[in-house]
Image 1: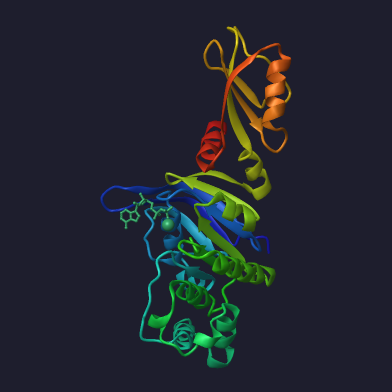
Image 2: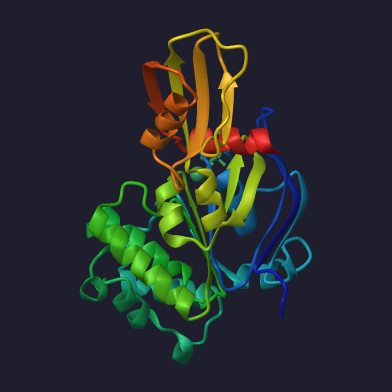
Length: 305
Ligand code: ADP
Ligand code: MG
C-alpha cells in the first residue's frame, strides 16, 4: 500500500480564548519512516499530536491515521496509533506489569496476545515489573509510557518531546528502541525542538512555526539549508557594489564598507570566504560571524518560501 501512515489536510485549531495554535497544516507521514516534527516551544506540535490522539478537538481540517479518518473511523484510527504524551500522567497504584495489562485490556487485546513482559524487557524495566509505579524514577516512567503506547501493537508510534528532562544514557536507550521498532516496520513520529536530535534520528523532517508548516523534506536536504553561515566583513574602502565569488551563496552591501556574506559550511570555510574578499582587492578591517541556528533556518526557509 502506498497510503500515508498519517495524512493531515488543512488542520486548524483555535483554542477557547482565541489562540490559533494550528493554522491550516497539510502534510503526510510516509509509512515506514522515522519522521521528525520540529518546531520551537509553542509552535503547535503537541496540539497536532493531541488532535491525533483525540485529546484535543480540531477546529477544522481533516486527519487520518493508517487510512482511517479520525472523525469517520475513530476506533480504527485509535487502534492504529500509540502515543507517548509530553506530560507524564500516571496512576501510582498499579505496577508497570499491571499498567500494561490494564491498557491491553482497554484496547481489547486478548490475553494470549498480550506481551507485557516482552515490552517491559524492551524498555529495560523487567526488574521493575512488580514495583509500584510511584516508586519509579522520571526516566523509568517515561520508558513505561513508551511500553504503554505499544500494548496494542499499533503500526504508528508517536513520541511527543520524548527526551525532555531525560539523561543522555536513557536517551540513547530510547533511541535504540525506537530504531528497533522502526526496523520491525513501525512508523515513528517524534516531536522535538532540537534540530540535532531530529537530524540524528529522522528520515524526514517537517518544521512547524507559529502553527504553520514551513518545511517538509528529507533530513539531508534540510540540514544542508541549516549549514548556512553568515559573516559580516568590514573592508578598508567605500564600495558601490559587492564583489562576487563562487563561494558566496549570497552577498549584500550593508553599508558603504560592510559586506554581509552567506556561505555554506558544508562547502567552504570562513578562511576561504575571507580569502575571496581579499582576492577582490579589499583589505579586511573587521569580521564577525554567526552560526545558523534553528531560528536562522526558520528565517531562511520562510524567506525562501
Ligand atoms: P508545542 O507543543 O509546539 O510547544 P503547543 O501545541 O503546546 O506547542 O501550543 C501551541 C500554542 O497553543 C501555544 O501558544 C500554547 O500556549 C497554546 N495552547 C496550548 N494548549 C492550550 C490550551 N489548552 N488552551 C489555550 N491555549 C493553548
Ligand atoms: Mg509540546
